[in-house]
Image (cartoon, rainbow, N blue to C red):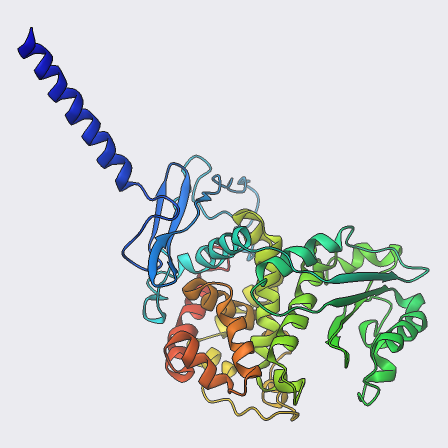
Amino acid sequence: MRKLSALLGLILAASSLLSIEAHAASPKSGLSCSKLNQTISSSGFTYTCMKAGKKLVWSKGVKVPAPLPSPSASPTRTLSPTPSLAPTPTPTSAFTPPAIPTSFQDLVAHVDGIKYGAWLKTREQLKSGGSILGTVRILIGPNTSPEQPDPLSMLGLTSKLFSDFKQVKNLYLIEFNNQDMQWAQSQYEIYQDQKWRSNYSSKASEQCPTSICNNASSELNNEGDGIILLGVNSVMDKAQAQKYNPGKSNGTVESHEYVHTIQILNSSNSQSQFRYSILPPWLQEGQAMWAAQAVVGDTFEKYLKLRAIDYSELATMSPSYTPEWISTFLNPNPTMIENADNWAYWRQWPQYRVYDIGGLVNEILASIKGPLAVMNIYSDVGSGSTFTDSFKKEFGMAWSEALPFISTAIAAELSRGINS
């Protein structure tokens, strides 16, 4: 009987040891890991090996998105040039997170993981951050009906993503349609005390060059307060306007413009508010576009849909964009001078390229090093650095050396379809 009891004890002890070892092999938030940016999926969650001080630890688990349905096929329907939004080949197969690139050198090998990595790291940062949104005053024109019903939530999420950086204490969001342009201009002049601006007296009309009010702008005043002018379409124009700027109703415009206020504030110093101007326009507009997609896209499926909206024009023209073209456009050796017309170089191409190509670049940078990496460049520039010096400091490689990898990866993604 004793021998049997001893044998049972050994079996139970071995079973317990196996259970402990199996449990230790699974990643758990806060436990140490060995390879930076390594991702492991376990029990329906994805964990990323992140740096915390001098240690490498597993991040909080992010729930793996449910499989996305593939669009139904019709025997009489011709193929559309618009890429499929489903990241999985069939509605029955489980979504397998793609490998996330960890360096510029492995971008092309892991091109499928770029968008997933950028989205995943953004959701992780949103979990750890807390909103530091200041006082927001929303001013709506007397004849204006807002297109986004809850702008405060979009502003709050954006603030949360960049809570490690300075943000404006006061924000004035002025929403107006074509009928309320004079009202909007008067409101703008109340809060903007930089009357020397060349477009000071035409600022509101720039957001509504026609009856379709699809433009928005953001800037700071002398007190460091943020001012956002948001053109809003009239009720009769809303359906038509959706074709040109769906972001007016999905919340990405508010997020985009608030990102600009953070960029400007963090790149400023006591001598100049316009250090911001020495950063390439594709970095400015691309970061704002990409960050808005990642903030509003609370699921990977929604994130893909927002990308498809913002990059729809780029997707139809993708064969034209070779690695050589993309590299020339992004400029391996940009010369940026404070208070100069630094957009001049990029005016030889359609203006929207600084948004969509820029968005894809910023997505790559976020996928490699997280969503805060680019904003660190703004802070560094505010301390007196240049774009190229700041880039090398942040990413450990010169911009001119990283660019060939970035250009090749973007061209590879475009050739396959934006969300394929």
